[in-house]
Figure 1 (spheres, rainbow, N blue to C red):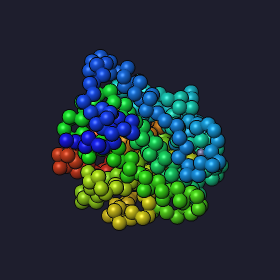
Figure 2 (cartoon, protein in one colour):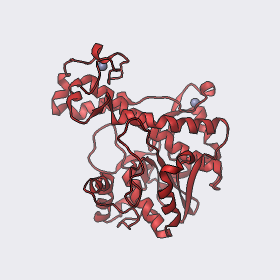
Figure 3 (tube, rainbow, N blue to C red):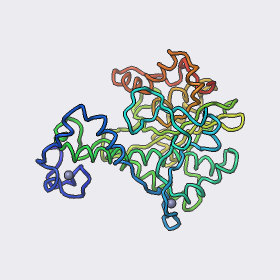
Length: 356
Ligand SMILES: [Zn+2]
Ligand SMILES: [Zn+2]
């Protein structure tokens, strides 16, 4: 039994499993593979939710807006062609090509802030050039965190919709653990981190991160944010257990953005979890300039779809470079890891996002 009869039903109804989806028939629409593209689109739409993530809701403006996780006027405007950028991010419709065209208004947006908080919280990085202050570093990383947290919740919503239409998925081996899927567990993992971010915001005490700020020469035609919960360090030593539902996993966040004639990369985690990431931190302190570039080039497609790229620059890449990027994006490093091989993030790939 993967779900107890008295456990909360995985469809998210709030009822007990035995009084909800236990023994319920699958929705026949979900059994015909021909319906998948349409159902996928509907599920993605239904899974979207609007909620301001800011801890003190008393000042929230009424409207939850489409907040940019990559700055629109400062960055997207500069890396767009005719108002469009490329992103490998999934669209509500199923697309099978890697890069999709997004208008600036839609690129990298999520409904995780009200208009007031989106404007006021991020003012110090909107209105000022990057100066490396604790506050600015915090805000770039907080925005990356907010997007990750919001997206994870949307994935859980989608799973709940899927479950309520197809309760028989409970029988798929390995999908559920203690009545929860891996995604539902991972939302819980974020809550502890959220409490620390919240507290820092409310008290304007931004010194909660261990961060690496790397500056590269030249304005690059891409920007990205992401997050990951690595189970291994760069020497393949285990640093955390992703499968134990009783121990929350810890995340590393990243934000890369061009500004003026430089490109900045911020890599950070909550200081409180330094013990988990000590060997990673040690290595990141030791690497050369070119290894830093390689690290960013390899890590971004591994961990995030929130990468905006100037279309004409991407189109100009040779085919084999686009293919290498795609293979990393679609999970080559994970596959290698399962096979017991190491994917070396410090090795130079054939593409270079910094010289797009
Ligand atoms: Zn149910
Ligand atoms: Zn708000």
